Length: 122
Image (cartoon, rainbow, N blue to C red):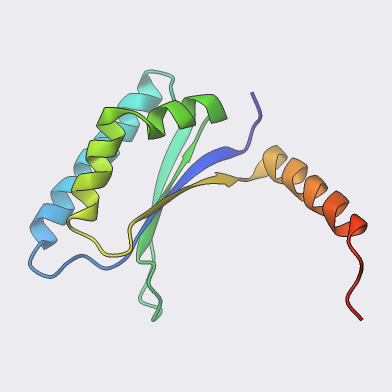
């Protein structure tokens, strides 16, 4: 297992008129991640809410785990249903893979190798 693999799940503003539903989906999502953690399928999860800043990102979840397990989760029917529900209540929903910790070091090493092989702009 490579430490530092994660899912980044970000969202924008709640669609007006769906605030109560948004609270329920947020709670359901927290329960979903808690169950996956309890079952040993993810290492950890953490939600973040951003203060108003004029951008499109209002909050995000970071879900840490082994890449193969995270990939399996992202292709599961339960996850896809959760994303469909969330997409109906928030703007700018996005899901992508993320790296941090040791995985970040590996990714940056690859970037450094590629960067050294490219001609420098003058």
